[in-house]
Image 1 (cartoon, rainbow, N blue to C red):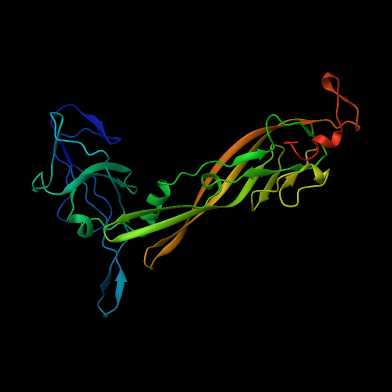
Image 2: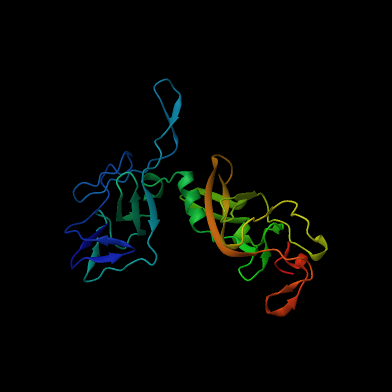
Length: 295
């Protein structure tokens, strides 16, 4: 932990305002719910190894209750703070970590020697999977159609599609480690939910098909919509990401979920007969506006 020797300050996003050291207790490896009473935080991570039971059969230890994140950059001793290392020499190998204990809604800072990695903090594989997920760059869908500057006609098919990139559709992979355990997670978009702004939701399992002029007034084969009222329709596209993770070398695995949402406004006009005059005196065939905003 950190021992305060001057007015409180914010370190690593955690407000420290204490008069004495916050340090792991001797029972730090015993597990259980975090004890945040007084000036002590009990480390509640446990060894995930199978331990023998009374009948000779083993059972898994309790799952981790707290999450540890190494501070970067590491602070130095100063007039404001001195590191309380729990009796260890300050120059011994180790680092400062934030400890997030969800069951108590308490976030603190602790000093951990490198030798504590296995004995004190054994992070559950799913926690490592979430750390890997947090390190990924997952962006909202890159909406290609409809476009805010496009012109569309009510009653005509609108083709919906998004552009492909790793950060908007996947796959994206990342890994996170704790001690000897490494978890690799891979994220990709499972489906797109189009909220069309008129009370309709369209579900598409892929990018959608790009419209080309030779399609005429045909409907999209896999991702499309028709509006029946003119006006401005706010369109939101939510990408549902599926994140598969597994422990390197075999063992535990699982799936996490994430979402990202993009938006655009589609402007719908009343249909006109083909080859009639559009505003500003232009003569354009109505089919030009039916399906392809990029035409």
